[in-house]
Amino acid sequence: MKFGIIKEGKIPADKRVVFSPNALQKFKTTFNEAELFVESSDIRVFSDESYKEAGFEILNDISNCDVLFGVKEVPVEQLVPNKTYFSFSHTIKKQPYNKKLLQACIEKNITLIDHETLVDKNNIRLIGFGRYAGIVGAYNTMRAFGIKYELFSLAKAEKLGSKQDLIARLQKPYMPPLKIALTGTGKVGMGAKELLDDVGYKQVDIQSFLTKDFDEPVYVQLDVEDYYRRIDGKPATKDDFIANPNDYESDFEKFSQVADIVMAGHFYKDGSPKILTKEMLNAPLNQVKVIGDISCDILGPIDSTLRSSTIEEPFYGYYAREDKEVSLDHPAAITVMAVDNLPCELPKDASEGFGEMFLESVIPAFFNGDKDEILKRGTICSNGKLTERFSYLEDYIK
Image (tube, rainbow, N blue to C red; front, top):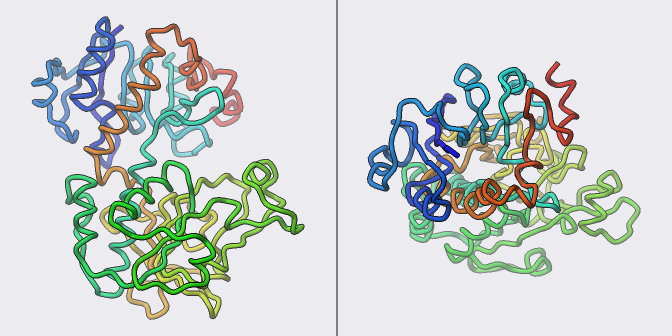
C-alpha cells in the first residue's frame, strides 16, 4: 500500500503535518511493507530536505498513492478521485462552508476519514492537537494579561521554537499573585495545566481558591461538577450532566468573583448551559480581567467569545454591560483571547506529538485488518455514499 503526505492547500497556509521525518522513519521501520512518499512543500514546518535526509522520496505529484494524509481540509479542486483522505474535514457538524467538500468526496468516490472521528470502542478520540491548543492557549492568555497591564511583553508563541521556549519566557517576568480558574480536564485542559505546572504556578483546591489570599500565582482546575449545578439542588455528577444537560445551570459566579484570569479548556456540547455569562462579567463583584477561551466556542458557553481571533490579532476587548466588542484600551474592557487554531503557533511540537499518536493508534489498523474497527468507525463516506455511522449528514449534502 502506498501512503503519501500531501502539501497543505488551504489558505491561510498551515505549517503542521501528520508525520515528521522521524515519525515517518518509524512508520517505515515498523511496517516495512508500506511505501511512503512526501509531496514537495515550501510551507511545511519540516523542509523537503529533512525528509530526503530521512530517506524519503519527494514528489510534485503523489496521486499514485492509495492513502493521503493532510491536516486541514483539502480544497475541492485538489481532490483526487478514488483515494482515501485523512484530514480535519470540518463536516461532521454540518458546517455550511464545507458542504461542497463532502459532496465532492462522494461524487469522486473518495473514502474520507476525519481525524476527529477516529475513536475507540468507547467513542474516545484517539488523536488530536488538543494538548498543544492548551499549551499555547495558556501562554497566550498570560501574554494578554501582561499586555493589558503593561507589566511585561512576551513574544508571540509563533515566533518561538518550542514549548520549552514558552516556559522560559513565562518564567522571566515578575508575576503578581494572580488567581487563574482553568476549566476542563480533557486534552485541552490538561495541556493548559501542563504549561502552568511547568512554569511553576501552584495548583490549589477549590476551597482555598475561593477563600484564601496568596503571595504567588495560583490556579484551580475545574470539571463540570465544579462549575455546573443541578437546578433541583440534587448532587451533580459528570455522568449525569452528560446525560441530562438541561437539568443543569452555571455555578461559576463564585469563581468569577475571585479569579483574575479564566482559561476555558472544557469540551462544550451543543445544548449545554452557559458557563460564564455576561451577567456574571457585569456584576459588581466580578474580578475577571482576562479570558482565554482556548476551546473557542463562538456564541457558546463563554459569553465574551463573540468571535474567534487570529494569530496575527489574538486579543479583543469585551464590554459586558452592553455585551459587545470594544477596543482593548476601553476602560471597562475585559481582554479576550479566542484564537481558534492555536496549535499552528507551535507547528513542530504539535506535528511531532500528533504523529506519535497516529502511529500508535491508527496506522496499525491498516496492517491488522482493522480488527478494532478504528478505520470503520472513522470513515465518513466511502464507495460514493455516507457510511451508516454518518448517515445523519444525508440532508446536509443534498
